[in-house]
Length: 343
Image 1 (cartoon, rainbow, N blue to C red):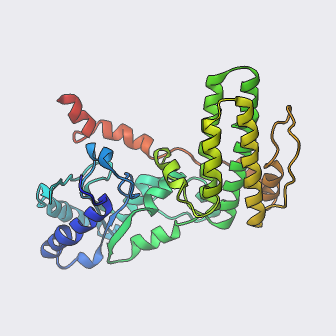
Image 2: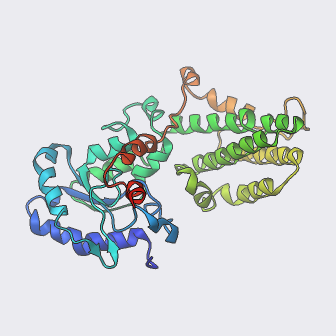
Image 3: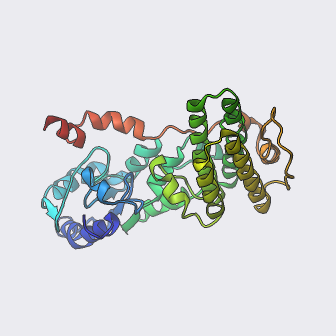
């Protein structure tokens, strides 16, 4: 692997090879094209390394058209992409992958539909609850290299952060997860029952959801689990304080001590909510073996009271587009894993 990140290699590929080819072959329509490095993959997040290079890695470019141009220009555009050489520098150029990695072309609306299951931007606050946060990362991360029409940039900017009521609901819901169902309440019960495997599952959920909540407090979207911890530690607020606490919880072997350490993290989050003006000050309470932890209950209640009551019955969509994409990719003739099996 080159010392350069995939994002930089891909931008060089676009500017030095792909874009000149498009200008040569389609000179009358290049002002109606957008070219970006977006979607799924470690390279889009700038986190690719030597391990990333074993599949679906290389120069990539999502060439996008306005919806009204798809019927007339997509066939021509695919033909131009087929004229690309097999390699750029020492890197293989992968074309037309069904998972939208490599070099591919599509309508701008098709790109967003592939990840968000909607061709259109959300029209109401409630519509936002249908969008999986991991997939919001996929459509807003990465780099737009060229955007003639401006439509791709417009959509990305419109999706860049939750509207205020949705942001508040996300915070309140995740407060309820980490102070109630997922831990430390149930971890304490598993400790009393000496059920170490179940305690490990609750602890893992706790770590994940605390990190996700910290992203939300920073008004950022949390990524796919594989990259959650890496990017959590780069957050400007709350991450620097809470990351060492989570490390200490993970290293602790005494389950009862883990519970108390989690409660302290939750109180720190309650302090953050006060700092953000979302809830009043929460006073530390003595440990109650029955209730275990109520550090964030009152904070969650105060936030819910600011939202439409009917939203109490609604939940955020947590099903990633990966699930459907994986089923489609495994049946694709160009799937990397299928090729490896055949060998």
